Structure formats: structure tokens, C-alpha cells
Length: 437
Ligand code: UGA
Image (spheres, rainbow, N blue to C red):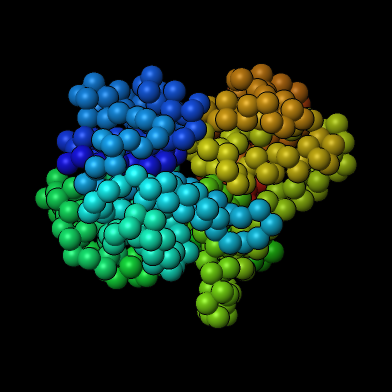
């Protein structure tokens, strides 16, 4: 099948590669020339495990090509996937859908016959209907629009795309569903269910799923706040409640909270859209979810001050600045936010990350970049582990202790072996854990 993928960010590149791997002829459209240049030379513009190799493989087969603008060839694709971003609007909670509309309108101007457009971007419920009207008006015929939200996680994006838990399709037109069944056939043949839903439900499934996940994380972090004052241990508590199958163990990892380009902006966008629809009260708890999440960052800063007093001139090493391991994405990263706040309070902050230092570029010159963990640790008075990369979990606390000025560490992800660190003479503070020594 000839398939167009419009917008080549995390979602678009992964989707384009996945569709090419399924044997389709994929044309990726990206207006950012820098990104396009990289992709055309076989380089993924961000770090995502396995994606670089997969991109090279599919490019060799000739199944994947990239271009800046639509042409007659791309206009004739059987499916056009919209994968552009919907970031939080500046100065409001709402999702900025302008890129989705711009991409759709551009496409509507070049298509000349029967066209199926499939939205994958996360949008406020009701967007697809407006978009269908606008595209049809511009194209001069009824453009078929379907919504097919994506549930991939950064770090496991390609695997999630090729082996999803479910494929959700919202459509007014059964022809679109059938075409998507055909496109996803190898995935469906592996037993993945395809849910054909109405369009508002499909749009809502995505924000509801992300809201639930965010709520689960904030729930455990709220319990961590209570555990801290009650002398209880959040890791033990999470394990105990997670054994109840109705609750489940996943997404109950406490720590410095959630970040990234999805959960924070999606719960805010949902709050904003629900208010517009007159049902703000129904999801008002998401405001609390957001607040609990941000309070965990405050707590780390508070702990640093509690331990070191005035932070002016204090040397602090932050381990991990990406919003999660196996990603170089810094969008709304909790640990980067903490690093910047510590620095704003006068601390000399060094940051280390196995992959994300490049994403910093020349932003935040106040943060000293540590290329190696060891150099970063030299004379540090406090270590803050903000992202649980595997290399941090395997640090040997004994030899590491020789490098620092002060054996003090805040484990912001509750992943370190407390007994081993304490045995090596460290004072380890873990969020919500009763392990202080
Ligand atoms: C999230 C969803 O999990 C995906 O299903 C969805 O497709 C994606 O957003 C999206 O909307 O595009 P992602 O942001 O890549 O995926 O990462 P998650 O694994 O959800 O982690 C988000 C944040 O929550 C990270 O900062 C992570 O460290 C934090 N987290 C996660 C916790 O603090 N505790 C947990 O138990 C789990």
C-alpha cells in the first residue's frame, strides 16, 4: 500500500518505519529542513533504541523515502497519516492544534480524488469533525477522516508500534476502517485486536488512557507524601497494593514524577477541553494529579536545602536529565527542572546523562555538562539521581564514594539498593521511603 506519513517527530518517524517494515511503500513528509536532511541521510534525529537500525534497513529496501512537500505522487497515497505534534499552548492549558490543521489543509489543497486521512496526533475531542469539514471544503469533495490514536512509549516505540495492545480506529466511514485493517494486517494476524469506534470515542480513548496513567503515578506519589510523614515506605506499599490484580503493579513507581511530551500536556489539554464542553468538574481531579506531580520536584529541592543549608556555591551532580531512561527527550523533564531550580538557588550544578546532553544544545549554560559520571562526581556535595538509566543503577557505591566530597545521595526514582549504599557509608534519601540513616 502507498502510505503518506506527515510530520516526522517521535511519533511520525516511528510510524513511518513501522509501516515500511510491514512492507508498505511509505513517503514521509517533513517541513523542517534540518530534520529532513538528517532523515534523508539515514539518521534518526533523536535517540530511540532500535529505530536507527530499523530506519537504515527499511531505507535499503526502498520502502521509505522522505520529502519536504507534497507532490502528485504523495498526494495519491491510499492513506495519509497525520503525525504532527499538539504541544501545550503558550500561556494556556489547551493543546495547540494549529500544526494538525496546517498539515491537513496543505494536504487538502493537493489531493484531487477519493482521499483517506488518518489522524494519529493526540487531539482534543471534537477536533476530527472540524478538520473533516475544513479539509472537505478546501478539497472540494468529501475527504474521509478517521482517528487512530497511537499508544507508543518512548524507549520502546518501535516495539509498541509493531506489537500494540490494541489498535483503536474511530471513523464515520467503514471504508477507512477496512483500509486500515489492510494496512495493519500483519499486526492483526498476530492477534492484536482492532477496535472500530465512533470518532469522539477514539479521540477520547487516547487522552483518557494518558490521564489514567498520570493519575496512577500521582496516586503513588501522593501516598509517598503521606509515607514520608508517617514513617512508612512507599516501595513496600506499592508492592503490596500492586499484588491486587485489580490495581496492578505497573505505573506505580514513585519518585520525582512524570514528565515528557505527553502526560503533562495531555492532562492539561483535557482539563481545558472539558471546561470548554461544560464538564470541567468531571476531570477537575486532574488538576490535583498535576499538582501532586509538580510537588515532588519541590520536595527534592527542599531536601537538598535541608541537607546542605544555603545552596550558594554547593556542588551538586544530577544523574540523568531526560524525562525517562532510554530517551534523549528533555520535554518537561522532572530532573532537568530540579537541576535548573537548584542552580537558580546558587548551587553549582553538573548534569550527566548517557544520551540527552546533546539535546541540551547550548541552552542552560548555567548547567555544567559532565561527560563522565566520575568527573561529574568529583568533589560533589550532593548527588541527585533524577532518571533511572541502567548505568546509574549499577554504580558501585564503594568506589564512587571515593570521588565525592560528601557521601550524600537523593534517589529520585527509588531504584538504588539502599542496603548496599548505606553499607558503603552513604547517606541515602529516597522519596517516600523510610530508609534515612
Ligand atoms: C506515554 C504513554 O505511556 C504512552 O502510552 C503514550 O502513547 C505516550 O505517552 C504518548 O502520548 O505519546 P511516554 O511519555 O513515552 O508514554 O512515557 P511513559 O512511560 O508513560 O512515562 C512518562 C513519565 O512517567 C516518565 O517521566 C516516567 O519516568 C514517569 N513514570 C512512569 C513514573 O514516574 N512512574 C511510573 O510508574 C511510570
